[in-house]
Image (tube, rainbow, N blue to C red; front, side, top):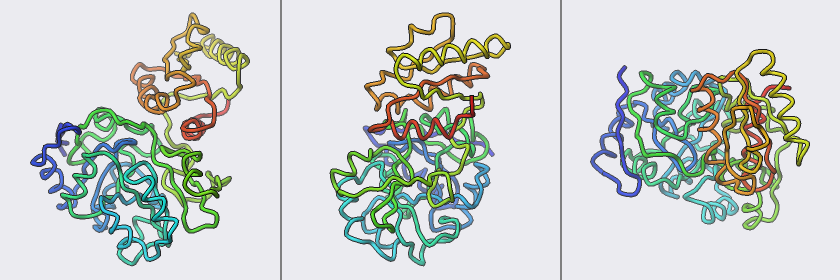
Length: 340
């Protein structure tokens, strides 16, 4: 299969090009497209054969549910048989945006989308290309991250091509994504509502809208949310996460880097801007300032992929503070890492 790349400016949507991509969705084909979080691999959510192609292209297990992306709040009522007031309140506050709501599914939603669960994950993306594509396709679009299963998520069209060229019909190139980590997944069927996956909407922001929010302690147990299986977000290199805080963190990073370098491995360090000069003699890539977690989130996956591109075998990564987007970043680094 030859994968076609369609370049579209998100600030000046070319509707003719969007229609071309939408026709691929209508035919039951796969189209990778940008959202504000990461690139998604899209298929018609109501076409079982099309949805099945996603699992085949990614090598994704069928017990990992998908998120249905919509462009109109009315679709929430079509895809869910029960939309409580708290769901509408959250949708009003954060949609379009990087928040996924888990609700009781309607009969319209196939079990292949939900991995056989009685719940469905739904979100309305903020990206203009994504919204335009959904509208023109005239159907909800399921879209997990556009990468091989378990690997680092894609934040550029080139990342998608690196993983899926020749396996899917089309990639829409809309530039680098803005948020850089996936959506926050919130289970509305529990009381209090529960964060199943940290993401683009922080827990602090959620609590400004609803007072009670529980953070799931079972993030790695069961498969109630997309992106919850172990060994997610992993680069090809072995990633070792150093969670120590303060000055001890840099010392631990240096020690580990020295040990692996002495064994003959090609070692890279993913560091905060303020610490980059502490690792003289080592290859260092800066993710951003520790105080600018939004920048760190935007750069996370592209930085990990750049290590792989350059053939690094070991990545020693500095941990970040777990507030705001830091919680989402750390969740992904932990799932991508192996023990020291």
